Image 1 (cartoon, rainbow, N blue to C red):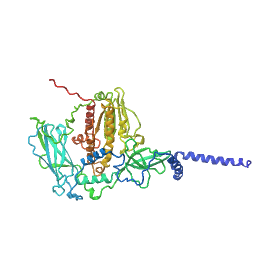
Image 2 (image 1 turned 180 degrees about the vertical axis):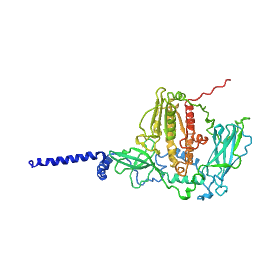
Image 3 (image 1 turned 90 degrees about the vertical axis):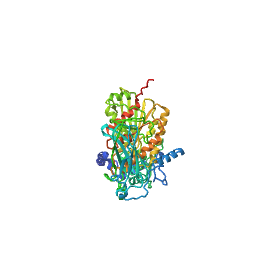
Image 4 (image 1 turned 120 degrees about the horizontal axis):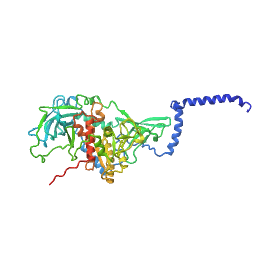
Length: 565
């Protein structure tokens, strides 16, 4: 045999060389190999790992995934009572008869308001406006439930204030405005949605809470898979990866990849928006220029003249006291803090000297970070190679010992792509803070919860509230400010996902849950409603600068001068 071996050497050498060249040629394109060949190796590897690992939890098949609001930790009896109270507080009136045709629904063009007995209006008093809603036939509506917003403004003074709308549940509404400046003031009333449209939004929130869907990329070596994710998923005999947060119990799931383990998740991203959510009948109530954000006009005069206060009005009963108002373009809060204008970068840095400012939440709090970076050249950003508009971000001013940090909140979040390693829950982040007089916490969390049942938002705020209380117990001098929701631009499609009605419901819940705590609210709802700018998800610089001035006025309060006796 040995004597024949030398004659086969060239053949075997050529064969080995060919195999080597083939491997070198294909090494960079392993993903183009036959899928069955690759999957065989990975399935073998995964089957071994799955036996050894306990971190992957598959939910039982018999579990009910149709309603995601009650996943997560079981609320205590007290928390359940609070949840019930909150849901009742935002209950919306229903039409007397469901399924009304468009011609019998609310028509803002045929509805009107009248100014109620203006009399001698003075600063410190209030203005009352009566509203009568009509349908497309010009007939008075007999039920309430229309979503109306109002403001009083004087363009020449760059002044504006939000009004409070009271629904009498019979087609009539009353709007209350506090009178806070002298001059000619104009009433502005808008129907955001008809009562019939609100019923459709309610149905979507209950039946189509997954109308925004999410996905995650799983990757190991050269193999990658993308699967659907959400706060709750139908099982459909397909195993799930359970990414529920161990500290808070906040649920999050993805369908398990066919060939990879759950711990190979790389990122989280928005998958998209469901289409064809409405019936032909329902779509009638969502028409731009017809019944989405349409002004309601006056049946007579639409303005009043407010005189300077001549008599003491301190004892007058006001139906509505706003959190603040605009005058000369500047926000003037009515909660006791004295607003200071931080127009120069040197004034901002002097206020923030020695401070650590932590911002958590959605893109509306990220605007504050971006504003400070743009207006204070002393801030130097660290490059974390984070995706644009996602973060996390960090900047320092070493000369003034200032730290700024921004981090997005945990899922659900509709960002383009967030690394799995950066998916942090706000409550867990707060538990990691030392706190103190040098610590400022800014939170905004609302927009990405608009498509889910309100119970989901209540649960998330409950965890954040507990963490805020723990932080303030550790260090009472810690300053915490929480941003409310704001109004935004709407069209027939965006109304189904981001309607101001959804935002207003969440806004009421947030205010109620943090009432009585040592936290300050940045009232973005009133600050956008009272301003002359068109509504936008991300308010324009004029409004953001007022928010920043409000925040800095709390960080560096102006001491009131004592009166000499």
